[in-house]
Amino acid sequence: MMPIMKQRYRIVLLWICTLLFLVRVMGQIWVGIYHSPLLPPWSEWYSGLLPYPLLLLTQLLLLMFMAVVNTDQARGAGCFGAVQLQTGNRLRLFGIVYALAMIFRYAARMTFVPEARWLGGTIPIGFHLVLASWVILLGVQKR
Image 1 (cartoon, one colour):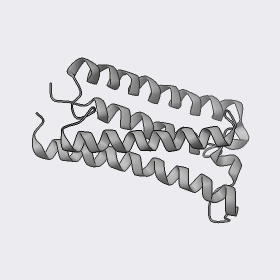
Image 2: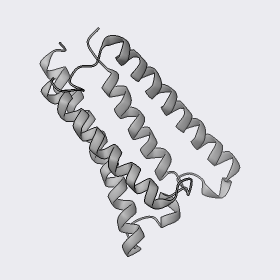
Image 3: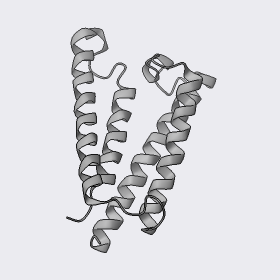
Protein backbone atom coordinates (compact mmCIF):
# COMPACT_ATOMS: atom_id res chain seq x y z
CA MET A 1 0.00 0.00 0.00
CA MET A 2 1.25 3.50 -0.79
CA PRO A 3 1.86 5.89 2.09
CA ILE A 4 -1.46 7.55 2.94
CA MET A 5 -0.56 11.14 1.93
CA LYS A 6 0.99 10.07 -1.37
CA GLN A 7 -2.07 7.95 -2.16
CA ARG A 8 -4.43 10.82 -1.28
CA TYR A 9 -2.43 13.20 -3.45
CA ARG A 10 -2.66 10.77 -6.39
CA ILE A 11 -6.43 10.38 -5.88
CA VAL A 12 -6.84 14.17 -5.82
CA LEU A 13 -4.86 14.43 -9.06
CA LEU A 14 -7.03 11.71 -10.67
CA TRP A 15 -10.14 13.71 -9.72
CA ILE A 16 -8.59 16.97 -10.97
CA CYS A 17 -7.92 15.36 -14.37
CA THR A 18 -11.51 14.08 -14.45
CA LEU A 19 -12.93 17.49 -13.53
CA LEU A 20 -10.77 19.22 -16.14
CA PHE A 21 -12.11 16.83 -18.77
CA LEU A 22 -15.66 17.50 -17.56
CA VAL A 23 -15.05 21.25 -17.94
CA ARG A 24 -13.87 20.63 -21.50
CA VAL A 25 -16.99 18.62 -22.36
CA MET A 26 -19.28 21.19 -20.74
CA GLY A 27 -17.43 24.06 -22.45
CA GLN A 28 -17.92 22.45 -25.84
CA ILE A 29 -21.62 21.88 -25.16
CA TRP A 30 -21.97 25.49 -24.00
CA VAL A 31 -20.27 26.86 -27.14
CA GLY A 32 -22.35 24.56 -29.35
CA ILE A 33 -25.63 25.77 -27.86
CA TYR A 34 -24.98 29.40 -26.92
CA HIS A 35 -22.04 30.51 -29.12
CA SER A 36 -20.55 32.26 -26.09
CA PRO A 37 -18.25 35.18 -26.91
CA LEU A 38 -16.36 34.40 -23.68
CA LEU A 39 -15.16 31.02 -24.94
CA PRO A 40 -13.22 30.01 -28.06
CA PRO A 41 -15.36 29.29 -31.15
CA TRP A 42 -16.64 25.81 -32.02
CA SER A 43 -13.82 25.18 -34.49
CA GLU A 44 -11.30 25.40 -31.63
CA TRP A 45 -13.09 22.68 -29.61
CA TYR A 46 -13.95 20.15 -32.27
CA SER A 47 -11.61 18.50 -34.76
CA GLY A 48 -14.45 16.83 -36.69
CA LEU A 49 -12.94 13.33 -36.66
CA LEU A 50 -16.13 11.86 -35.15
CA PRO A 51 -19.70 13.06 -35.64
CA TYR A 52 -20.41 15.26 -32.62
CA PRO A 53 -23.27 13.14 -31.16
CA LEU A 54 -20.97 10.10 -31.14
CA LEU A 55 -18.10 12.14 -29.69
CA LEU A 56 -20.33 13.51 -26.93
CA LEU A 57 -21.62 10.04 -26.07
CA THR A 58 -18.05 8.73 -25.94
CA GLN A 59 -16.95 11.62 -23.73
CA LEU A 60 -19.85 11.11 -21.30
CA LEU A 61 -19.17 7.35 -21.09
CA LEU A 62 -15.49 8.08 -20.50
CA LEU A 63 -16.35 10.55 -17.72
CA MET A 64 -18.57 7.93 -16.04
CA PHE A 65 -15.81 5.33 -16.32
CA MET A 66 -13.25 7.76 -14.89
CA ALA A 67 -15.55 8.56 -11.96
CA VAL A 68 -16.03 4.85 -11.17
CA VAL A 69 -12.29 4.17 -11.37
CA ASN A 70 -11.47 7.23 -9.23
CA THR A 71 -14.03 6.18 -6.62
CA ASP A 72 -12.72 2.60 -6.52
CA GLN A 73 -9.16 3.89 -6.26
CA ALA A 74 -10.12 6.19 -3.37
CA ARG A 75 -11.87 3.35 -1.54
CA GLY A 76 -9.19 0.81 -2.38
CA ALA A 77 -11.98 -1.60 -3.26
CA GLY A 78 -14.13 -2.58 -6.23
CA CYS A 79 -13.16 -3.68 -9.72
CA PHE A 80 -10.62 -0.87 -10.07
CA GLY A 81 -9.58 -0.53 -6.43
CA ALA A 82 -6.11 -1.92 -6.90
CA VAL A 83 -3.89 -1.99 -9.96
CA GLN A 84 -1.42 -4.86 -10.22
CA LEU A 85 2.21 -3.88 -10.68
CA GLN A 86 2.40 -5.26 -14.24
CA THR A 87 -0.86 -3.52 -15.20
CA GLY A 88 0.41 -0.29 -13.64
CA ASN A 89 3.58 -0.51 -15.72
CA ARG A 90 1.50 -1.00 -18.89
CA LEU A 91 -0.80 1.90 -18.00
CA ARG A 92 2.17 4.21 -17.43
CA LEU A 93 3.78 3.14 -20.71
CA PHE A 94 0.49 3.62 -22.61
CA GLY A 95 0.00 7.04 -20.98
CA ILE A 96 3.50 8.15 -21.89
CA VAL A 97 3.10 7.00 -25.52
CA TYR A 98 -0.32 8.73 -25.64
CA ALA A 99 1.17 11.98 -24.28
CA LEU A 100 4.09 11.82 -26.72
CA ALA A 101 1.64 11.26 -29.60
CA MET A 102 -0.23 14.42 -28.56
CA ILE A 103 3.02 16.39 -28.36
CA PHE A 104 3.84 15.15 -31.88
CA ARG A 105 0.29 16.08 -32.99
CA TYR A 106 0.80 19.60 -31.60
CA ALA A 107 4.17 19.95 -33.38
CA ALA A 108 2.65 18.69 -36.64
CA ARG A 109 -0.27 21.13 -36.34
CA MET A 110 2.06 24.05 -35.72
CA THR A 111 4.18 22.99 -38.71
CA PHE A 112 1.40 22.32 -41.21
CA VAL A 113 -1.12 24.92 -40.03
CA PRO A 114 1.14 27.91 -39.28
CA GLU A 115 -1.81 30.31 -39.10
CA ALA A 116 -2.96 28.41 -36.00
CA ARG A 117 0.17 29.28 -33.98
CA TRP A 118 0.44 28.96 -30.94
CA LEU A 119 -2.87 27.97 -29.48
CA GLY A 120 -5.18 27.63 -32.48
CA GLY A 121 -7.09 24.35 -32.48
CA THR A 122 -5.20 23.01 -29.49
CA ILE A 123 -8.10 22.45 -27.06
CA PRO A 124 -8.51 18.79 -28.12
CA ILE A 125 -4.75 18.23 -27.93
CA GLY A 126 -4.52 19.79 -24.48
CA PHE A 127 -7.31 17.67 -23.11
CA HIS A 128 -5.87 14.50 -24.64
CA LEU A 129 -2.80 15.38 -22.55
CA VAL A 130 -5.10 15.59 -19.50
CA LEU A 131 -6.44 12.11 -20.32
CA ALA A 132 -2.89 10.80 -20.80
CA SER A 133 -1.99 12.23 -17.39
CA TRP A 134 -4.98 10.45 -15.85
CA VAL A 135 -3.83 7.13 -17.34
CA ILE A 136 -0.27 7.66 -16.07
CA LEU A 137 -1.56 8.53 -12.59
CA LEU A 138 -3.74 5.44 -12.58
CA GLY A 139 -0.66 3.36 -13.29
CA VAL A 140 1.36 4.85 -10.45
CA GLN A 141 1.48 2.28 -7.67
CA LYS A 142 3.85 1.32 -4.91
CA ARG A 143 6.79 -0.71 -6.22
